[in-house]
Length: 86
Image (cartoon, rainbow, N blue to C red; front, side, top):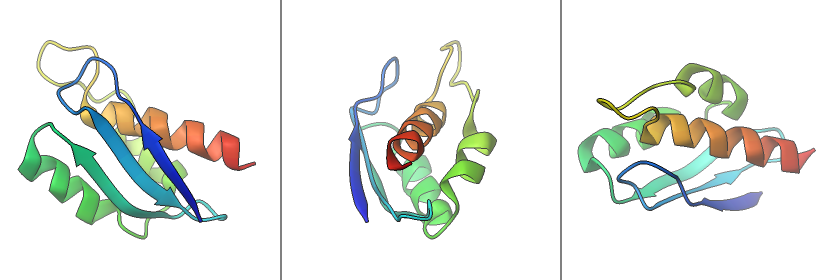
């Protein structure tokens, strides 16, 4: 299992961390900063889920007038981790 720490850009969250298994399954997802309740819910929903599928669902999500969101930044982190896992 690979541990990932990703510094998001353009959002309130300051750090996204998660573990990724060899076959691309998400575990122990957490956010530092951001909208606590929403991000804890995302973390619970994605526990044990496929990272590629999660990234496809979350990609392009925006937060208010921002061109990105914590969820969108998570999709970038997941895709980057999957690419490095190959």
